Amino acid sequence: MRIGPHQLKNNLIVAPMAGVTDRPFRQLCKKMGAGMAVSEMVTSNSLLYGSAKTLRRANHEGEVEPISVQIAGSIPAMMAEAARHNVDNGAQIIDINMGCPAKKICNVMAGSALLQDEPLVARILEAVVAAAKDTPVTLKIRTGWDKAHKNALAILHIAQESGIQALAIHGRTRACGYSGEAEYETITVVKAEARIPIIANGDITTPEKARFVLAATGADAIMIGRAAQGRPWLFREIAHYLATGEHLPAPEVAEIHDVLLAHLDDIYQFYGAISGVRMARKHIAWYTRGLADSASFRHAMNRLEHTAEQLDAVNDFFWRARGRDNRLVYLDAATGERAAA
Image (cartoon, rainbow, N blue to C red; front, side, top):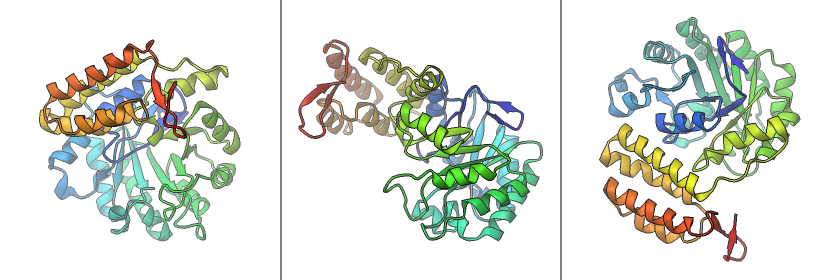
């Protein structure tokens, strides 16, 4: 998988997720086997370039290349300036957000709302590609605005004519949000006519599903988002399965404990003690999701305000879990009884 001059080590990409794909998470997923990770969206409003949030999102210090930064907005000139600004600050790939279904984004005619206005899509893409110059520009979309208006194929043609170098497609419309199941037929149709790499996204949660989506769509790569939350080793599991047809053993409690501790340390350093504790809560919840005794643990953990207290709680939970033959113990969704992973 190649994007412009950048040869990726594989075709597994971390999807951009607001509030999730910060530098600590991107670095962890790359370490765990992802070939590339796209940043959470960065505003195209230059008035916010100096805000703490925007500066943090543009922080790529020590990040494994290639560095892909997603920009969001609806005004071509502002999007062009955002591209220039982020290239000047280390971005090696600029990704354009036309896939986010969130109301606060779509209500200002950004994200997937832009799919309703194909002429505007063309103006944005042309402006950003021109501004980025030698830096490759990619695009992330959905299949369309709603099921009656799927225009991913039309967007492909606009993207190719505008100089976009890869297109990621989430197999749902804007109206679908994240409900129902992703469909891959539209991605298959787009791939059949594409002259640029196509990246399939949506509901890729297991190694088997990854292989199915690649085979069914003919896509050049897959993009994984929510399934990697609290499960960054999913990338190495998929990479191994695609290469060998065999499954890697599930990570043991000791490794998960160590991965989480390293992730928390990176979060604390990146955000600072106060914000770091708050940011860490959702990651701890994802790592322990579905584990026996985790509901009461998370309830207590969410009331903690200091890094030392948070770390003590995490260590206590996992040291108790390590006593169970070093295997995770999940709760069966149907019976509520314990079942070893």
